[in-house]
Length: 194
Image 1 (cartoon, rainbow, N blue to C red):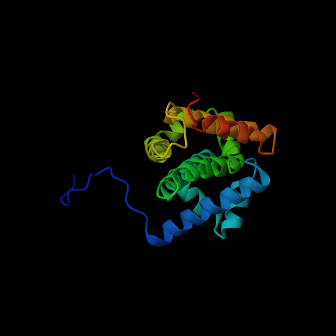
Image 2 (image 1 turned 60 degrees about the vertical axis):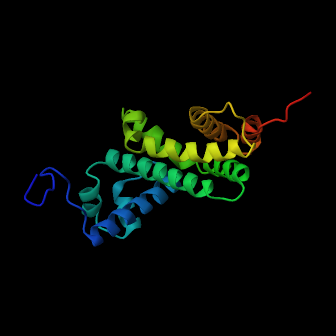
Image 3 (image 1 turned 90 degrees about the horizontal axis):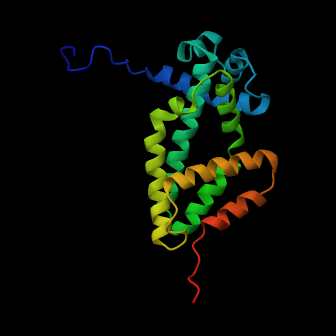
């Protein structure tokens, strides 16, 4: 700790312009990788962001670091979207809308995860910094939908995560919504039969 009570090894916060540049690089990388695949170069990302390649490397010293940051950014957005959906007046519709939107938007995330796996990067290690945030947001959304009687009571957050992953993978092989519809139907609460 220094005299101000800040840990000596704590990273310094980014200046406002550096924060903007980092956000521009991430947004450009997401777009470039979605359009051209993860084999696209960091130079292409820099051009799309309107910054020099040195700026990209200042924030992300390797392409792996950039890919990791994109995965974390996407998961942080998923958590924020889950929290926003949890505030909707119809908890059941909000849960199913969130689930469907997440699966439909999963293609670029899967490419990022695949690229990291090809580099030998452990997915759990990569996602660890935001895993609890995502699980908490999903738990809130799921609990509200279950309380409203829209989602089966025996579904857990782990089930939701596994089904999101499975439905996202299925979308790679069948671009229509049939597999997604089957998964959503399996999550719905059923009226008890006499």
